[in-house]
Each structure stands twice: as structure tokens, then as C-alpha cells.
Amino acid sequence: MGLNRRKFIQHAGAASGLLLMGGLPAIGRPRAKKVRVGIVGGRFGATFQFHEHPDCHVEAVSDLRKDRRDQLMKTYGCAKSYPSLEQLLTDPAVDAVFLATPAPDHARHTLASLKAGKHVLCAVPLAMTLEECEAVRAAVRESGKIFMMAETTAYMQGTITARKFYEEGRFGQIFSAAAEYNHPGLEALWFENGEPTWRHGLPPMHYPTHCTAFLISVTGERLSSVSCLGWGEGEGLLKGNPYQNPFWNQTAFFHTNQGHPFRVEVNWKGALRNAERGEWRGEKMSLFLPSGHSGTGTRITEEQAEGRDDAGFVHTKNKVEAFEFPRWWETEMLPEPLRHNSGHDGSHTFLTHEFIRSIIENRPPLVDVYEALAYTVPGIVAHQSSLKGGALLPIPDFDA
Image (tube, rainbow, N blue to C red; front, top):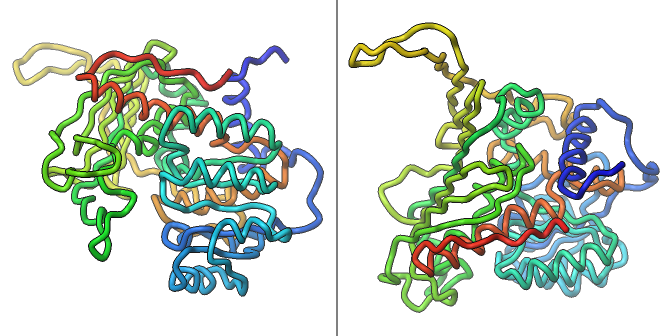
């Protein structure tokens, strides 16, 4: 068809949306049995809906802690558990795994799962280093298995709306965008029973995907370079962290391959509201999400009406209005048992459904390995930029 990799991803994402809406027939051979999933990780892993999906069966669960294994078994109505991922991967009855494990383990756990012949849904981010990113990409290609990253931002109700508006051309050209992920007080999770957890000192830009997905999952463009500044000098609880990270907060200014600016903030500390929000600014329309996972957004549309500013100067006045985002989880985008609100602004049921259907239909999911890399890699490079005082650094392209 003459499509390059990037265009193929955009077309595949659009086709995925049509499939969810019932606009296209299922691709690939029909599957005679349900997808048998293993859930690994008893915190985040216990917040999904695999047991409700009509094409899925939770075959087994795993966590290093017995209390969390027991909770997983209760949540999913599952009678089989394993004390480690390694043991679960030896179970031939498990077709696919959901890796809701600590972020520094994602690449290693993904590689082991693919090697064991399992389809993989992995929590965010994909990896901690560029070398890990390359290893995961190679393993996915070699395995022939479905890989998906569970990026909640891609299926927030506001993001789904923005994606539909973009596909309909209602923005015109999106000439700039911004996103922020504020989680003040995160240091409360840095220690447990006096021992440091994997979150201790995690560089904010090593957890960028809740921001980068706001732009990339809507327009398909890629982030090509970055200048990033950090705030902090390794003081307080940052001391002795395993990442040698001195920053509490980081702000990045990205350039995209379409020549657009994209500002991203990830903040762990300060007088901030919790936020996971995006802004898309276009020629014809702009859209702003509320700060939290619920509430009223703002839509601005280009108008030809005459207005005056507070100094009396005449200008063209745009229309600014409160905007209630549709509740897409109530629609035919989901099978009926999953049509209810879920975690992270209704995204968990969508992630559950997209992963299972991509396996059954043998097609790339919306957040396949190339999208996962596009969300993750820019943050890794942004952190390096902040360590160099904001130096403008190129971001490698993993689409090739």
C-alpha cells in the first residue's frame, strides 16, 4: 500500500477505533476459546475487568506477597495462584499476561514473558533506559506475539473525544499542545515499613507517558527533540535514591516531527493540584481537560464576532464554553458487561477490551510497542537533558 511505519500506525489506530464502534468486521480468524490471562501484580493489577470480559478467562494470578495473591484471587474469582512470575510463565494454560509490576522491572518481565510465548499487556512505562527499549522492540518483533502498554491516558474520556475531533478535522491543525501530571506528596509511597520502594527518587520524566500520550495518541506525531529543566538539588528524601536523581519536578519543551511545540510537566512536590490533563490548541478549535479525572472541560471555537479587550481594543472574539465530555464507556465501544465507569477516567475497561480483542483479531492494539516507545523514550531523553542543564537533545526514532 506504500504506507510507511508511522502512517501505518495511524491507520491501524483509526481502524481499531472503528472496530470498537462496530464499524468494521473483525479481522483474522474467529477464536474458538477465551483468552486465558495471568494477572501479575496485586496492586494495580487488581483494578481491571478481565473477569467481566466475555472473551476472557482469568487463568492464574501472581504476586510475591501472599496477601496480594489472595486479593487477586478474590477480585478475579480465580482459584490458581503462583508466588512468582517465573512460575506462572511455565503454565501452558496461560495465553497472555498482564504485567502490573514495578516500573523498573517492566522491560525484564516483558522479555521473559515474550520468551515464554505469552502475549503481553504491560503497565507504564515501557522501560527505564534506551537499551531496554531497543531490547523490547526486538523481542516483540521476533516473538510474533501481541504486545500492548496499558497507558490509561490514551483511553480517558477526554482523550477519546479529542481523538475523534482530530479524525473529523474539527481542530484544523493542532499547532501546539501541553500536558501535565502532578502527583504532589508522592514521597509517601517512597518507603514501606522503613524500606525504600522502587518509587524512591524515580525521575519524574521516567514516568512521562501519562503526558506524552495526550498528544501522540491523538495526532500520531512523534517527539523529535527536547530541552528539559529540573527543580531540586537532591535534598531531603531524594538523598541516596537508586536513580541518582536530584529532581523533584521536571518541565520539558518538546519539538515534534511536524514542527509543533509540546510542553510537558511532571511534578512530585509543591503546592499543586493533582492533575492528569492535556490541552490541544488548534486553528479552528481548542480543547482543555479539567485538572482531575472528572469535571467540566473547556472548548474554544473560532468565531467571526467582534469583541473588545479590557483596554477597549477591537479584536475577533472566539467562543469559549464549558464542555461536558461524553461518557464513552456507556456506548457500544465496549461489550455490555464492561459498560461502567472504571479507573483513571473510565480507561481500565477500554484497556481490558482492546488487549483481548487485539489478540482475538490478531491485529496491533492502539498502544502497540511502537506507540509505547513513542510515549516512553522522550521522557528518558528529557531526563538526560535536565541533567545537562536543559541542553537540546535529539530523541531517537524507534519506528524504523
